[in-house]
Length: 166
Ligand SMILES: [Zn+2]
Image 1 (cartoon, rainbow, N blue to C red):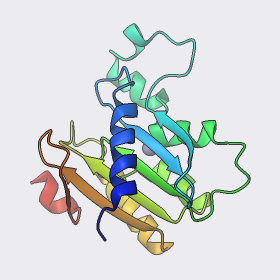
Image 2 (image 1 turned 60 degrees about the horizontal axis):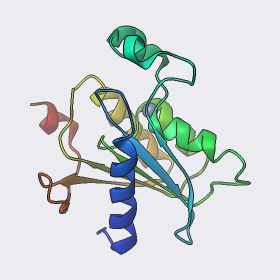
Image 3 (image 1 turned 90 degrees about the horizontal axis):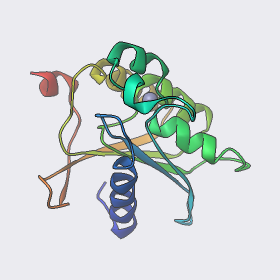
């Protein structure tokens, strides 16, 4: 697979959306219909009413309650009658976590495109690896692209968990 102009546009949009997150780890997601129209966007963060300045500092607490970019994209797109065959673009991670990939599977998306520059920490990598296995098993296409520095040039990579953590 390679990126077409629409893929590049939506990855850039997911990157822009990721910058809206107040968390140290910034992830953005864009949920797109097959006709290239956008259903919704989401970024990782706390639910409205929670204090970002204190909650985001306690990492253990935060990781238990933070909403992921993909979850928020699904929430804001919740009035869509069906997501079947749609694509989700994720910027900031190589792919979704296991929980979000389960949501992606239940929604019967057709394709997942992950893009990242550098991985901020390795804590979530086992979950991403599980997600890719799950997506493979239910035949949902997934691709991962790594951004070359800040030049917005994208290289496809076969995301290899063993190689990445070494
Ligand atoms: Zn997730």
